[in-house]
Image (cartoon, rainbow, N blue to C red; front, top):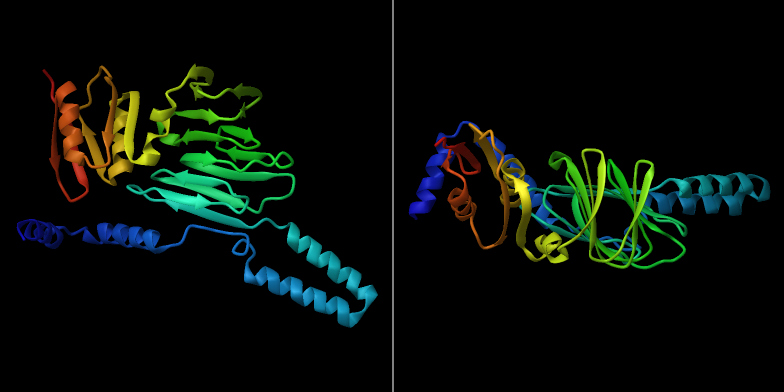
Length: 293
């Protein structure tokens, strides 16, 4: 009851409550939406109706006009379908593609799927995703980000492609992948990761369990600056964090948290290594100040 009264007071006094209300509504819509698609769902009704009507025209009008109608059906079938999956902050989602590929989308991520063909399977990614690609030797699977393209036949790998982190990371667990970065193409073996940062490509030995820990609700980070850690916390806990008075000397962090830890427990752990203080200005707004010694 005490907690409810506190929340009610914040709600009633906050003139911008509609922003949080809209965010909550979007999250509710996300949770009740079915993100699984199958072979039947991949063909919209309108497209089926056009094909059926065109086929009827062929039967009724005759061979001459039938050839024209058939060409129209063929042109229609070439147009790729586009389905967009978006995961909000504080959430993850599981997507099953028609070819049997399974994709886990991390928080604040976006996957664009277009109809696969017998020779090509391509998706576009912004954010982070873990892929288990169904093998098809005749149709390579491509994952496109804004700076690189990952090509596989059937394998298990993780792609971290958040624009705000300033780098791209592809970590291979099983199989083989080729990564195209601009005009450079590199191959990876299991247990390796490709890192593209500051226009430089590095291939390093990877801690694969750390890279995909988020799938099993573990918040892993390795040698990242406070600025990136804050962005990750915003995505993981769906909060807005304002960093004031940042230190001139950037401190890097490594650690693991489970999903049970609250944002406050995480901030308390950070405070052990960095002299910071934090205050909550709203239900989802936190202000962090780096204390100068």
